[in-house]
Length: 458
Image (cartoon, rainbow, N blue to C red; front, side, top):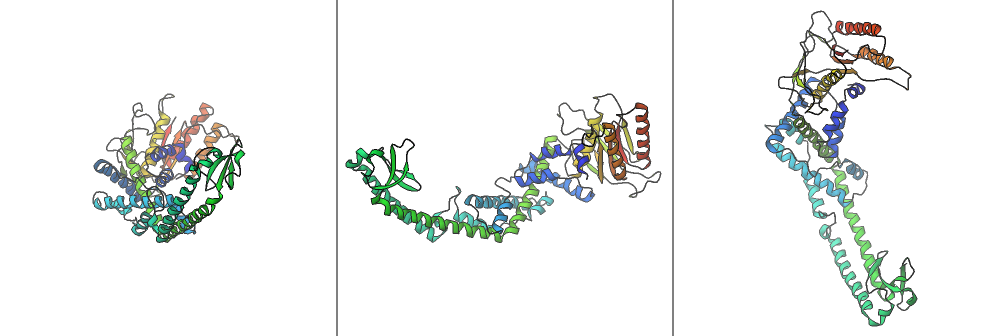
């Protein structure tokens, strides 16, 4: 499908509304990239997925994908030997939990939602990876003591070293002889070392290393010499802890890398399910109906007189981007023996909206979306949708509105075949009325003679 023509009928705006219904970023990307398919079997499958999603919404309250993340960038980092943070790994295991939950639900409902259950079957549980991450990292993103024997030992020694250091420093602060030298009787940290704030004029009264000076210069933050060795030991253990944590996270990242393909497949399956549920939710928002798909009647490429073409039957069709309380529904019908429909009437009468509505109905149906139409509506699967609607004046190419429209229409005539939908607005406008009407009549005669399904506003 040509993106320019889909943009003309505002299909991108429909996708933007669809994307608001997704649960996580991978589904959003699929929603915004969704395109109409010209293949009837694929369109039927897409519509069925939406039908199954609506069933889940009605019977189960939906399919929760809460906790799912697009972890594919993290997987790629791990695949290249990079390190993942604890929070990154929590995103991985959270995604796997969501995936397993969804898979269990759809396995149980395979009979009612077979297509979505087949999508869920692509999920790889990766339970061993989840167990390793959950056993090593807390819900708050902290590496747990029991993640390794060495980490548990180092942290025990750290606590002991810190307690001894604090006891030593607190005795210095509590000593009455030191009280006159202290700016405040408290401990603080500078550069990862515990220090005591003393008055600058008493520098040297408590021997130590100056780690910082206050902005006013009145306070020195010193580490007493008598506590330096204790501070060094505590700092050494901190560095040992950091090194062991890095090793643990590296091992978990390597586990992620070994399951890179499985994790990628799982995210892709979740994204497909997210898109299906978004289509179902959007259909409910629009109070939409699944259209019947009408097969093409006649031989492909045939333009012989009497050959039947596409039948179109839209009942009470509503433009999906307009306020449903104010939009006026329209009925549009082509029998298959008719190839062109000409709409005429006053300005602001709804001609352009009607053309865009038909174009959107076709594009939406072929993208697998249910339509804001009444029951009994039927639509074919077009191989191309072409539209010349609105002011196409090109300043860059120094083309007038009329010239730009004419160039666009000529391009459409060269590409549209008997399985295409052609939408032309204000045909013949922008030039002399007599010449414009003659041109419009010639174009319509050409399209009609070649059996192109055409809707025209004049």
